[in-house]
Amino acid sequence: MEDWRRIDIDAFDPDSGRLVPEDLAPPNLKSVNAGEIESKISQLRSAATSGDFATALQLVTNEPPYSADEVTKSRYFEAVLSALTQVRQAEIANLVKQLSPAQTDVLIKYLYKGMSVPEGQKQGGILLSWFEKVTQNTGVAPVVRYLSDRRTV
Amino acid sequence: MSDSVVRDFKLAKAPVYSHCFSQDRSILAVTLNTDCLVYRLVAHGKPQLIATLADHDKTVTSVDISIHGRIVTCSQDRNAIVWEPLSDGSYKPTLVLLRINRAATCVQWAPSGYKFAVGSSARIIAICYYEQENDWWVSKHIKKPIKSTINCLSWHPNGIMLACGGTDGYVRAFSGFVKGLDSKEQVANSPWADKFPFGALIREWYDGAWIHGIAWRGSQEKLAFVTHSGTFNVVDPSDEISSAEYPEGLPLTSVVWVNDHEAACGGYSCHPILFSEGARGWQFAKNIDKSVDTRAPVAASFNGEEEQDENPSFGISALRKFKDLDLKGKVSTQVKESTHENAITELAPFAENSGNVTEISSSGLDGKIVVYRV
Image (cartoon, rainbow over all chains, first blue to last red):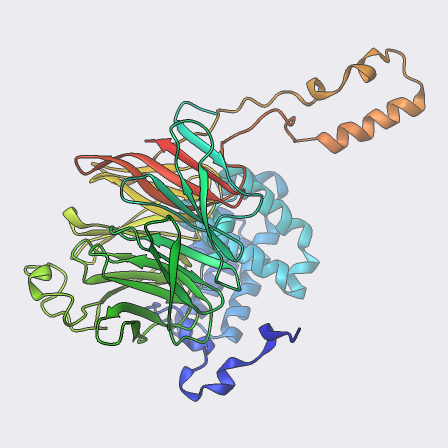
């Protein structure tokens, strides 16, 4: 039988209008400007260097720059990753417990982002222990929400 | 099985994507692969198969029965078929031309039983009604601004407003006003809009996750929808969305209103879930038909032969060690957490008492139909 699932039916109907990524972009995202992100990055770095990880984690998980372009997002992510990896294993569980559900959802996004890029994969062990502590605390609910959320970090 | 389960039928060894009871709850229609099976319920025991509706040639995705007893099915073969019951118990099929180029995913009769809506992957909702002069079911399309597959549909009890949800993350309410069938009195004083021309987008709400299930509460003018991210949401004419999260976090696929302040949802967790509205808004209330954790320790499921083996040699103890590893975290086969053994695909009200639902029915990927007391 012909593999009918592979037929490009849109090619037969010019009016059908193909689905483009912009069609599914989430509306009403809060726009961020470059200056805000830069200042957030430096705040994040100084909090991490001074060992104040609770503040750093609050910065990471509050209002992530969803609407920024990919380059900015990856610059921002570098700072997030360096903060996350400086935390000592023993402290992770405690920090995770202080997060609200919405903040936990954001943290999970950064953990998955980390595991998807080479820089993060080098620190995979630490990201996985963050992941383990989050799921011990809240179950798989944030993961399901991560999978279905179109706002990416 | 907990005491909230009233009836439980294992009808098929394949997924049942959709089921529907007739108005008097005497007839049950379920989808099975490329067929739709029609059963008559008997007081005790298994329902009796009375007809197999076999005209579709791809998976049947949805079935609904009108107040007049007409069955409509839709399928991935891009067609819908209306099945007219005949006096000898058989059904006469009429093909409905939907004019869509992708699968039809969901179908629902309007409360009047004279028109129905079909959702599809072609980013189209087809409103179909019978045209006397041509002796034919015709369809009119609602296209804009749908961006992706429609997963679920619900007619408002006024028979004109049609809510839909899909994989583009939007919940939308359209007008399905058909000239000659509907009258303006049906939507007089509606809080949602003033005018209802066919196909008009009345409201839209963005959620982001796939919308799997949707249901109106007409008496309250509220709309509930459930999503793949495991949230239950209610919107009202003021566009205020109140949400509640399901603590287990698994996706929800279907929702029915139980009364003005309670709604039951089903999904990947294999048992229905009740959400209720209190002073602090909507919240998760309880699980229905979920046994509390009665997990037997793994060792209990070993058979006697191994337990007699008191002084095992090294080889045997290694064997046991690996068997232990293999069973780690598992429950013994006797323990069943819920009546459904796989995800619930659809919920529907089964018994009502003055506007409040007392029993709901569900179909699941395990081929079961279950009726629960709520």
